[in-house]
Image (cartoon, rainbow, N blue to C red; front, side, top):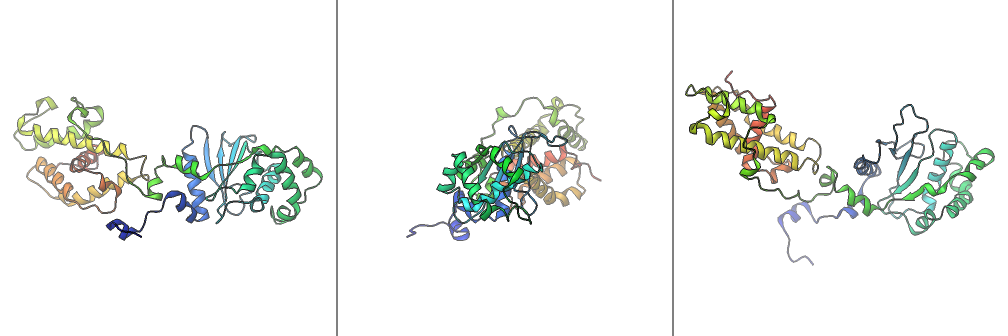
Length: 350
């Protein structure tokens, strides 16, 4: 009995843990999930390619160890994504073994170095026992070829006889194995789509202190800093050429602008591996759209436009981007100067 609940639970329901959520994935979604997981193994594989569907010749997700282009003997691993409501049994996959044997026999592709089954419900006990006993696996496939394989490899009957049988007898059945779902989930935590798929909270954000901001302007700051100097000079009250010229009338603003820039840079870098691609760029774009009218308005001088844009950026209501929950007012000021640094903002009156 639930004695206490929260507003988020009322709105979104009880959180479903990842190991249960994958059971509700559609087959295509499961293949995409495995492809994402393999993308994290770039130090092991040259490239990853998802086949799946009709015509895949028994290959769902292929992990190339070598570049396959122009290389008939490329090395590769096969990850076969089987999505059933129960653990995989041998009868579910006899034809999958047969496809790899047949298509490598007719030289559609080389024999994979390894062939793994990955399933939301894992492999059942009987299949798991076969996968660690290659000779027994070979015997079972041979015994079940006519019933489970002969008419399921292609649109014609493929009998295990003559040269195919010779090939079968010499085939290395130790290449077949499995990957457990818990291991996939443990590693997928490091993928940028993990939170989008399973929910959860973003990592804690370290505090940015004054010592984290370099005393000297860095090379990647030069554009927005130069734009700020021009904005200060537009007041007609100064003629700053370099940052050391900035007097106390503008120094507080300049320091806050640099602080904001470094806050925003921390936000950009810290969460880029935890969120889907372009999440931060979308956040920037929402700020840019929110200050657009301020930028299009003529002001007394460029410095006034800078300040009005910074103020407006802090007032914008962002409701959907996940970074809204970890962003600070300084980030929004900083994004104004990131956009200036990128050449998307011109502080001068048109």
